[in-house]
Length: 408
Image 1 (cartoon, rainbow, N blue to C red):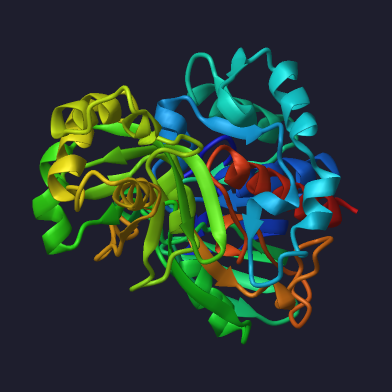
Image 2: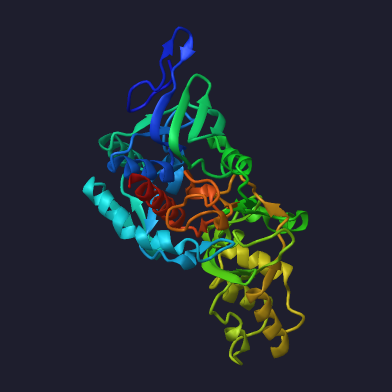
């Protein structure tokens, strides 16, 4: 018999023949978007099944936020998302807001707290969010099947999906298979391949919210400073973020770096302000302060972590101690140009930028315009949020809108 979870076995062998199981809605992927869609469609009385190729549901939810799941952001707006069509996400985000998801969290009495910049985390564990979604699906009569890897999908008067030991027939098929990020968790390109099978355009994909790798020269200069964190303002591609930067033994990470990585393209330089809104050389221009390396060291150590300050001074000594030279020295600290060799790839990326072209989908329902009954939701779509709970909010919102459309 086939694998099962939260329901009856989905296929029966009769005389060595697999009996096709029929559902109104079949959802591929038991992540954030897939489970949200399932419970909404199930509440409308539809017969809903979810197929998950992994051995448990919500695996990416469980590791998010350091295991505490940054499940949404109360400051969410369309400006927190990037897409080839920046207007596409507006409808879904307006129809299902962070307040709606927070009401669900509070209904299940899950304790949570707000961190910086509107980020909401579980007090205990991300397992609380997964358990909540599973319970909502159970109450809605949704059947969830794990260890169910899809082999083929056919479309004729509905959809026919075959796994290794089962066949499913459904009127509507929802693709919630995620992106390419964190392949060690089981991420694959299946969703994009399925879109291509149906003639649906897919925007080029790339790692997003991902650390950078130093070039060989920069690694020699800064690689031994791993563990140092400081607040910066980083710019790239017409975008900027002011948050913490972390130096690693391989490159740059931290919230500011992860944010800007979503906009970076190979060979683009990063412009980093290491002392935003600070005039660090001002004390050195006072006639009462001696202008020498020891004084400069003390002054910069008041602005940057000591080891970073010392390294910066060693690599960027002043031409002389005149005011024009100090002004140039000031400028250098606010405009550190660095060209990453690459990113840490999908292995360390939190999400995938690019994906199923939003021009192919209804912004209200997530249904394909050219293939009625076929829906794409969540990370597989070309909508990528900033760091801080926004990608989860897109998953909830897109899943909700598809589920609502399917429940009618």
